[in-house]
Image 1 (tube, rainbow, N blue to C red):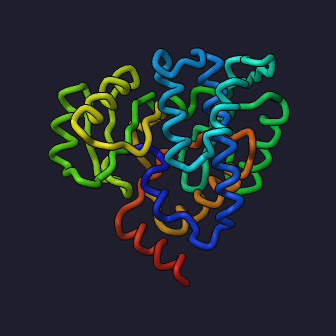
Image 2 (tube, rainbow, N blue to C red):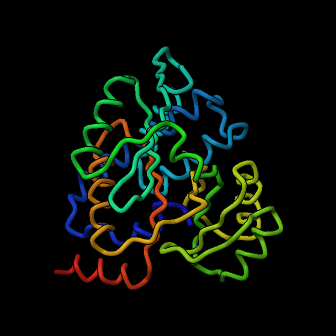
Length: 254
């Protein structure tokens, strides 16, 4: 399972929802801009842009915002945008490994901000390669559970090259090689199975079990990183058991 999927259901219920929503919109828009810049504005010929747009629409980003982002990214109208992708490596509490992916127009600002957030929240920056060797780029599709079963998802996905299918809070998580993701996503749609998202993500090969106290510290660091405009994605190798997840959920209800 991808690094952030399990802890998605244990996020703090009392978070500032509107602020988080605005941050999410901004990051989804940035994904669209980068995809359009890399592969052009035609979604039919740019599957990365297609998936970025679909994800934004499912998160209720307004169509006008999406259209403007495509034009900015593709340089239509002279308003081109350019971001650098930078990956930072770190360790959180309990030796949990982290890959912190930034999309930024200012490398120095991003580096300084990530380092400050990590060290202030009990983590340590890691040397390049010391964390990333444990992660592989995979296609991660979250298929909707509505109107379908795990067997239906497995039948459609495995025939198209998927490697595994697991339960997910929003339905089923389908893992494939990154190069097979479009084929798997297409097969699911052809089988009448809707999907919530389709992304190329870094998935850990070796997981680190965490107790509730360690998990809370890791989540605090993740929350702080997510508040940075430059931080686009965070991947970890944290492994949370059902018992620990229940303990965390009980704590949120206090």
